[in-house]
Length: 271
Image 1 (cartoon, rainbow, N blue to C red):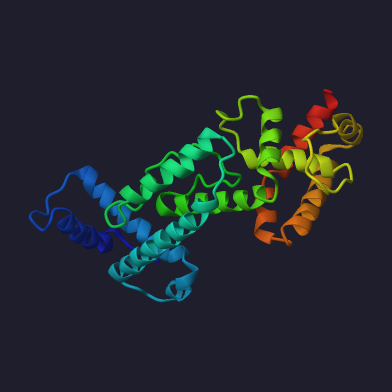
Image 2 (cartoon, rainbow, N blue to C red):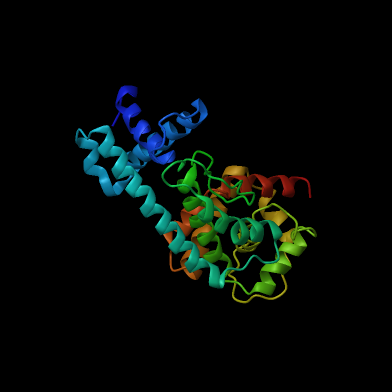
């Protein structure tokens, strides 16, 4: 799947002709770089696609690899759009403006302006709302699809709780939560996991009052590694009891358990 530059230049040339409407093959150096990036992006999509694993063991001409990759980009755009449209009807931003602006306002702009053929590597959006998975290495539709998947998992997590309950937790955690750029599902998870780490199950959703003195007694006696194990166990119980053991959801939130355990330890040590 590694191609020499002289194998890629003809593909860029054909793209340049389409870009200029076949009226000219002369383009700027910057535009040529953009089109080369588009070709490489599509070939990379083919390489990463589980749908085309056989291609990794075949000697595919560069032109064919590009065409197959382009098709995969188109399929991923459709897949991302379908997931987005599935999410929108029941989507709740819990009064957080950053989440609303990024997901409700921003994502449609991406689909409107995304250029599959001439600049698929362009993510277009800044994606200001932070998700709990590192997607910084992704670009284009890859990044948008991963972002939508993360929001899907977060919405699955949050909708298990009453909206008022979530809003109460957010407001007690940060009085400016409506303007905050923090991840709201992490805030709710921190409260819930902290509650469960005391050995309590969430049998009802009343006032969001954390028993901080009890939590401090538990965490001040343990090091970060033991707290991490305690939180991981609590998370596993939560996912098993409330989300039918959803493995994808479990692995998603395991991403933040380490940082969460450090925060709990620091809070306990500093009262």
